[in-house]
Amino acid sequence: MRFAVLGTGYWARRVHAATLADHPDAELAGVWGRDAARAAEAGAEFEVPGTDDLDALLADVDAVSIAVPPDVQAGLAVRAAEAGRHLLLEKPLALSVEDADRVAGAVRAAGVASVVLFTDRFRPETATWLAQAARGRLAGGAVSWLGSLAGSPFDTPWRREHGALWDVGPHALGLLVPALGPVVSVQAGAGRGDTVHLVLQHDSGAASTVTVSSTVAELAAGVEVSVHGDAGRLVLLPEREPAAVLDAARVAVTDLVQAALTGGTHPLDAGFARDVVVVLATAQRALASGCREAVPA
Image 1 (spheres, one colour):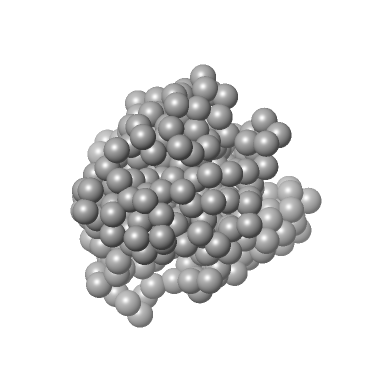
Image 2 (cartoon, rainbow, N blue to C red; image 1 turned 90 degrees about the vertical axis):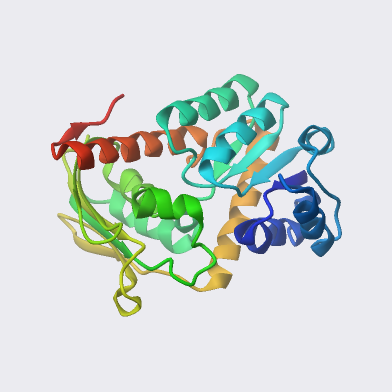
């Protein structure tokens, strides 16, 4: 399957392009960027054309792998879907429910395959953890995901503006929702920096807590994920090695190719990612109101 990477930043090159260039079922055919010079530079790194002509590149590929800020991703994803191209997308899908609806609607209307790179969901350890969780009756769960953007390649304007809720929150929801069920209401409180604390009510009757931050001290950084119920407490051990991210991206590409070939849907498709955006937007309202907010259907 011929892919174009849309994006020229760190994640676009080090993860999306690098994965596609080395994948047995994919061919990296080109790189697109809003800046023609940066696109050409990124393309040269992988010995493929780099261009700012999106329509020409879409005409030459079967799928796109998008790694741009989420507000930019939404428009690109709609254009690619309308052109009949399959989609490997990033989280969050968009920064508003309206834009997320546009992407999910375009994917459905075009009948193309979509996979969203919730990286931890493509780890075999996560699949085992979720399978174990499904065997018992769960009462709740907890995610604490603390880090710092300072000095990292992820210190980008959109992350600074929208904070950990939108950057890290999708990871937490990508783990808790399949274990405990869809979220029906959210309570939220703000901490120091961009720290956010959430209490989620799930349709299963379970409740979970989420704490996310991108502004903690370096020594405070870490990830903790667990669910608990009748069978005890199940802990998902974190994996932060760079190689694990590339492994997850390879699985995501494989899954997208299979979904495209079979015409099937993927559990982490644009529809799932749209539902995550709805919960994040609800949490944002809860932060502003100081009240519990119901998640719209």
